Structure formats: C-alpha cells, structure tokens
Amino acid sequence: MCDFGNIVDDTFDRQIYFPTMIFSVECANFEDLNAYLIPLIYSERDRDEAGIERSNYRALGGWHSHNSLHQDKAYAPLVDRIDQASRRISESLGYDDDYELQIGTMWSIINGPGSVNKAHIHPGSYWSGVYYVQTPKDSGDIEFIDPRTFHVMDEPRFQKGVQRCRENWTKVRFTPRTGAMLLFPSWLYHGVDPNLTSISGSDGERVIVSFNLVQKLKIG
Ligand SMILES: [Fe+2]
Image (cartoon, rainbow, N blue to C red; front, top):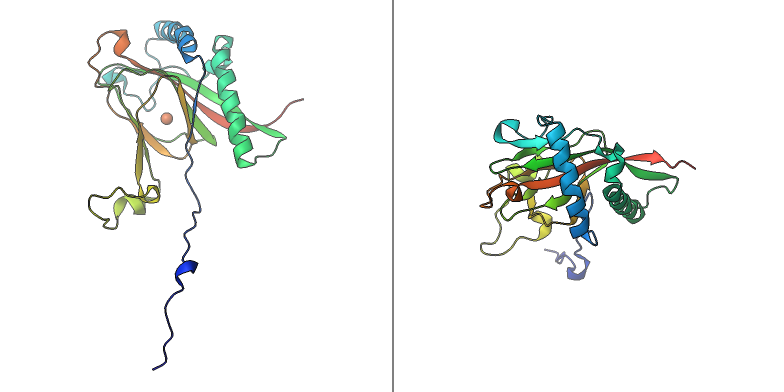
C-alpha cells in the first residue's frame, strides 16, 4: 500500500474569526469624577424614586433611572469620557471617519444589598458600556455569556486541572472596579450578580452609569 504520509506539522494553524470584543479603559482622576457623580445620581433617585424596570428587579431594591441622562448637561464630564472611549473604538475597528459613535441612551443603576440585574442585551445599538461609580466589595460581578448556544449547551471535555484557553470560554466575569469602564457589543448577553456586600447604608450600594452607542454621521 502506498504511504500517503502525515499532515505537515508546521502547516497546522489556528486563526480566529468572529471574535467577541470587550474593551476596558480607566478614567484618570476618577475619584473626583465619582465624588461629583454620586450626589447627581442620588438626587435623580430622590426625584424619581420608582425609576423604571429593565434588567433590574425593583422588588429586590434595584433602581434604574430614565434613559436620557446624557441629555442633562450636568453629566457632561462623564459623557466626555465616554465619547473619548467611543472614538478609540471607532479608530480601533476602522470605522468610517465621517461617522462617530454617539450616546443614544444613558442611565444609572443603584443596586442595594440583594439587588441583581438579570441577563439581557441592549437592542438598537452597536456598542454598550458601563462606568463604575461606586463598587463596594462583593457588590456583584458582571458576567458576559457566549451567545452561541451550542458552546454553552454541549461542551467538549477539557484537560482536568488545566485552565482552558480563552477561545474555549463560554462565560467571562469581571469584578467591577471604581473608575473603570467596560464597552461591549450590545448583542452580548450579560447580567450582574447579587449585591452581597457587608457594608451597610448607601456606601454598600453598587452605583453605575450605563449607556448605548449608535453610529451617526458627524455634523459639521
Ligand atoms: Fe446591560
């Protein structure tokens, strides 16, 4: 029988297509920014105690503001930083210079002890993000979930005791860090764990500002 040989070792190649990108960035001087934002957000909650219900559970104490905080000029310092991060995404991905990512909606969430955010996506936008204003210890990690259900449903067996390479993860979690911003595809399912902090009072509340980005033609 003819010997057809083996595969050629140095031609074995792994390339990645259709990646899921999560960007992170830290804001300089975030302590001052957050000290400025906290009273703003709490005064908004005082004004609109009921808020609205989205991924939060009002019954568990999760508060969600209205979706147009970016139109309030008081939030301009944060909007400016989000715009800076948005420009970096457009540059990084080679988007058309005639267009820019703009905030379409922006809201705040305050999660007191026991509050969670159920897994959800953000329809109607390309990118979404979260900025962490106050993140007490154990106040809830954010978890992103691979949307390709086959991956979650039926996983191969992997080597025991060996960390899987990132390409094989089906979920990824981030412990929030005050002053950090995460930006992720709006179609990417995500949820937030319960706030299990042992800190009492408002210092134990997890406070974030979240936003959606849409691509619009630049004006002027
Ligand atoms: Fe979200």
